[in-house]
Length: 325
Ligand code: TXA
Ligand code: MG
Image (cartoon, rainbow, N blue to C red; front, side):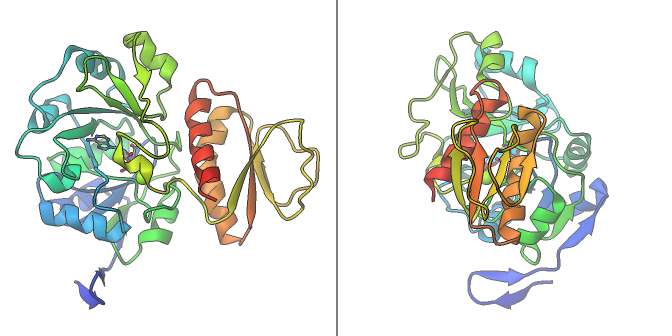
């Protein structure tokens, strides 16, 4: 039931469930549902239901010029979204679907403009997490989903983080565990002759190069003039100030600051999270930001890591947060 609350949004009762079938019923009836994937939680709607997609933008307070990714449960569904699959896209699909890779293809006319923010292309990804797959199979349609956070906040890696941002604004949360990877998918534009990386993410450049040796990161993958429209908005940031620190150079002396990284800091810091690998660091970052915000921490020191493998996407996210201060 919807209770009007001001002009822009309504209060909805948000149902919590561990049942993929129950969650899918909301999608079938025009609702919006948060669900886990191996990267971060998404906030889904039926790709062909314009009104439901509008609800996603309202619930997240997402700028309307930021397109959504369509999530599929089987490769046949690609043909409901796109007509042409260039050979490089076919190679990427064969290697990385299901998994944390989004490919951008030319969309078919039936995909509504609101889903793609007016673009003639659509991002497509097949999540690997079993609960996501069960949910998408039960929905019986591709599901568009941005990350399930309020716009500008860190992506949610637990259902509790989704609840914190979106309780009362969405119909349902499908409760899974903490997401394994913790950083979003890599977005690759396959409409140009040589595919271009539009957003670094959970599949590193080195692995993409095994399939497409010429693949490169878009020059527009910058803070101001992005080809992937979402990148120009404030993103991936806690309320606290983020400062990048290098191992061994600084002695961390700010006792009020929190720290996340791999090497134990030499100086005195407040709350800290020491990770045993870059993978663990990547999967812990966004929840650490949120925990710092809950505790009112004003500064978060993030240790720089080598920009290879998942470390490249991790440093990308940290830099974006640090530049948003
Ligand atoms: O891992 C993920 O990708 C998660 C999970 C839920 O799948 N989703 C996610 O969605 O991170 P979102 O909306 O927070 O980020 C989608 C990114 C944005 O930077 C957006 O601009 C870009 O993908 N994108 C989506 N469709 C696009 C398109 N047609 N062309 C270019 N960029 C696109
Ligand atoms: Mg997002």
